[in-house]
Length: 312
Image (cartoon, rainbow, N blue to C red; front, side, top):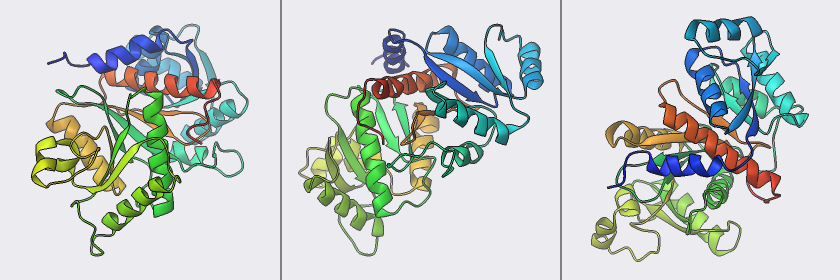
């Protein structure tokens, strides 16, 4: 079995060959968020711009022994102002990624989706976890576990396309998406199964492109070949999915956290569909997970610089 973090380490090593991405770090006013940004800078993944109360950031750095000499600080009096200032840095072309600090995700996303000064695109904004699951040969993408609470069918189409485009940026050789529900048969009593079937028909009609997609599938027959065989599911996705699309945020969040806390997986998080990638980290994240989240954002930023028509 491969050593833990090998998939993440390969990702980080590749991103070291890419010029570091200018990233606005929003309100890094606790040790974990400030240290994560500085570590990513030391690894040449990002060039951080710290956005928040200048003296408070300096105090956190001094108390934790974090060297922020030479790192630009944009002074903002509080977390809401920091989110707005960071978004402005993106609009001015000074930052190519956002990184969440010690503010609530909702506060950051409110500035991102603002209709006048935000970072909206034609695509719905959504979240992906890149899960490094022990025993699996390739990373597992889980969506949406952090942004869209109860997405409509139209919103699910964008969430699905975001995840497919993202999987290609991660250079997965074949993208196989399982649209999850509690069962693998279509039933009007379970609306998520009907929406899964509709999404698959959208794939058939070319409205969603770039992957093998099947659903509804239950989790067992999405990722386990024997479970798919027992249920007699003939599908190029069943048993071998590398992208799992949950029916709603609650299911996606519980799935990702179950993998993390019961299966020992690490979960690098990224928000897609805005004008730049948004790095979401948690105080519970390991150093490797924080670096992997930054590396994922570097890949998305590179794709945008190269003009790839993806993610909005």
